[in-house]
Length: 279
Image (tube, rainbow, N blue to C red):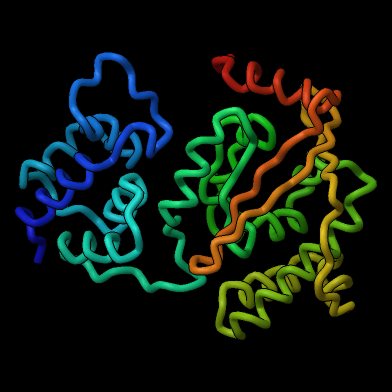
């Protein structure tokens, strides 16, 4: 059963202790009280301000598990706090472990501060959970995919359009790398894992994947410099730094260019292109 009073009190408390800078929002000169406004939390949770307000007021519908998960992420809750929120909302908490998509507050705080940098948070299978606006401008909205296509390795072997964003001279290495990475995760997670399911799908759908899979390569690493191709800006040479959260099997990928280089100038242009309204 949902504990409406407990849920409302917990939401109000968490909203009150979160500061704008904790979630990448400007504080503004007119803000007189601490904490976030309801409409700000609602936007972070991808729901209407009215829906969120009714939860804080002990009324409204019983939130679904998907909605509770969105609230937990929007409020930057820890795993213990997330589980508590699920129980208050009358649901069993999601299973913890490598399959969890709940991003740790620390990783989110870092991502929220990378306004001028392409960055994304991915799972061990290359599923993009969050992106900065500049990342979306650079490689598109990778969070929009569903099903197996959420995995970049799956898309690499099943969607030819994916390769258009990468320099042709890197394709062979990336093909080997995605197969090697999937094999490594499968060995780690076992035959009943999502990695095993992805491997079965690709073995059935891609002759190229079957060929490289049979090579049994492990530990294939990307080049230090990534060669990307943007549809408007052309070729970019970017370094990719990775920050790993071992508890959640998530990684924060940050893309940078050498200061003063042509690619650095293109990234600055990208911030302008990415902020333009769609035609």
